[in-house]
Length: 213
Image 1 (cartoon, rainbow, N blue to C red):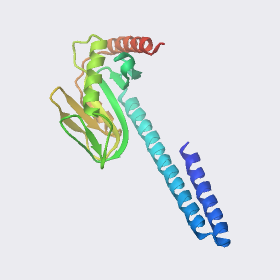
Image 2 (image 1 turned 90 degrees about the horizontal axis):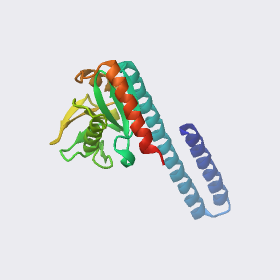
Image 3 (image 1 turned 90 degrees about the vertical axis):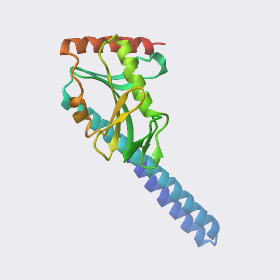
């Protein structure tokens, strides 16, 4: 998709320049300038969307690679412990227990006690830290666990080392995809492989029921 957008951006820009040159050749300088400007704006928009898509793909690949290297007993994608109200991007079980909210963005990350997060100069929608805490708590309740479920916010292109954000209700690890494995390996070990796999099956069943029409 990103490659197609880049190619389309080139076609749009070249076409606009050709039309603009033809218009200028017959004395229509204002329409010519307007055509080239519009073409440039459209091409720039397409290139921006292509770059964001490429960054998202790289982030997804890095998260998948990190989870593979951790060799957890079970990994559940798109779990729905909150029912139809939303899903958890990734739940990792055994020996740790963690709920991971993934945000595809690149830059230096800063956050506030209200749960809001900025990447570079852009604020991420909502309150991602509080969202991560709520998701971890929902996983814990869904599985009827007495142990804690750690909350992680993975900003895929975070340009810092992992940080522990302290909120009133709970702590949240904030990490890049690159350092996700390091954070997971630092978490408390709660579950053996058999317990983790049984918990994953229970979570997948609950998610299936929540997603059913």
